[in-house]
Amino acid sequence: MSLDTAPEANRRFLRITEVEEFSGYKRPTIYKKMKEGTFPKNCSIGSRAVAWTLQSLIDWQDELIANNEGSK
Image 1: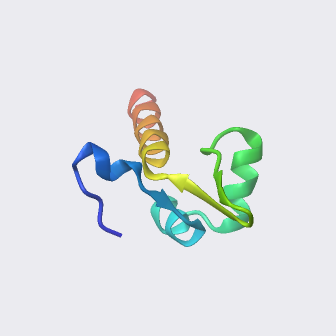
Image 2 (image 1 turned 90 degrees about the horizontal axis):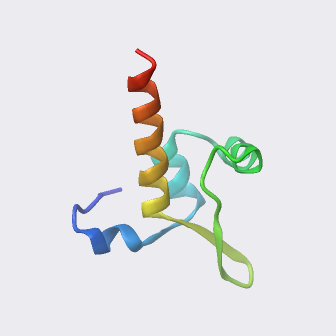
């Protein structure tokens, strides 16, 4: 997966396989962490399809990094 640095590029949707690749988590862990409130929520993009926004995942990743840097 290629991440573009242009702000509008972060508005794209990612499906579960891309989210697994981005986060390093497998599907069950992603849904468990969503339920716990520690992972971005998905949104409906069709009658039987969900996705995550790239920006929500980038924000989640930035927060994790900031929290880990603060605990050192």
